[in-house]
Image 1 (cartoon, rainbow, N blue to C red):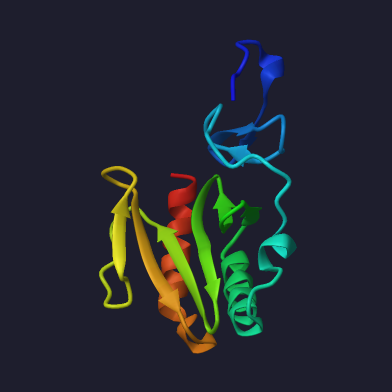
Image 2: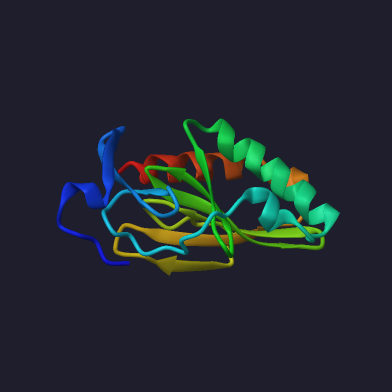
Length: 155
């Protein structure tokens, strides 16, 4: 996407302490102008369509908890559903029969046997991947991770 240098190429607003860029095509908001993304009119319902009922139920449980940690906006994309507070701090990347694959970005890597992989967006931006196979796994530990990600989102 090419941005013109004039202010009318995008709209900025203040959210917390971060300036957010709003894509003029799809309306998604980001923490920096011109952020690359899958631009489109994506909806949570479209992403969930055709997924297993058990997987969708787990997603809905996770969604409710993620939304409860603060001022969180759902940010659906073509291949995932993000949870945004400034930046996208968590996402459900896959919904399978009886399992959802999730990541949470935090300021430091999460040390837990539940984390199956940690990627790095930068020195202070580890992406912690894990799976949830039952509603009971959306526990206090996951809530702490979501809160840490929420804080990272506006950091």
